[in-house]
Length: 217
Ligand SMILES: Nc1ncnc2c1ncn2[C@@H]1O[C@H](COP(=O)(O)OP(=O)(O)O)[C@@H](O)[C@H]1O
Ligand SMILES: [Mg+2]
Image 1 (cartoon, rainbow, N blue to C red):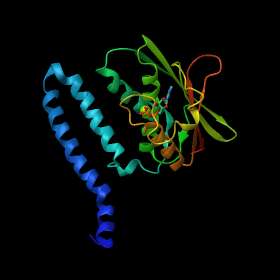
Image 2: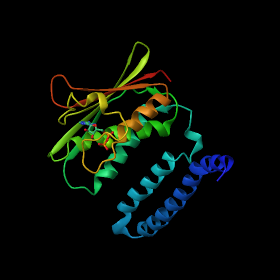
Image 3: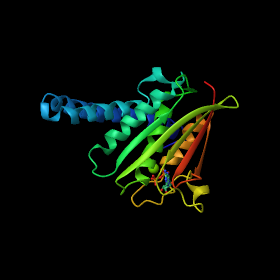
Image 4: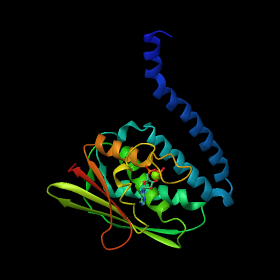
């Protein structure tokens, strides 16, 4: 392969991936359509439809939602629905999500990116509380110094101080069979949309706190 071919190949890598994923999404949608026709499986079909829709947003099929900013409460709704769908077929902890979000709080940039950010933060929080009877996640937002500050707080074990500096690094994970990409994706997307993210532990109880600071949309 000469240089030019290599470049052309690289340029088509992403559209090619999206193209093939779309065929996968279509197959799942068609199967879900069949399931939905049966009363007993309608609920499961709903999970599949939502998952496909989520996948399509992630790969950027819906161009209209890009670069227009996003309502924080809507983004958190979507991330929470993802968490419910994810946990649905897993027995175990009852995870509750509590929010204190400003009605008019908006995030700058790409709505699909922010959905991925909160999906990953909620998923990590839920996974940190695995093995318990129940767990609580809080999502708070406030305006501070003309910036939107959002906190995602859980009541899991928290993050060992010795690994705190490394958790946003790609492929860093303390969990077996986990890729260690979640927080790397979080930081990359947060920064791509002009914001920042930090991690810490709660002061008065056990648990982790992720804080995002974004310019006002
Ligand atoms: N809410 C949390 N509570 C405790 N530890 C966390 C939390 N979120 C992330 N971590 C730690 O950060 C590591 C990296 O997270 P992440 O990048 O999402 O990778 P993965 O979930 O694949 O392990 C996790 O393995 C875990 O040790
Ligand atoms: Mg993760």
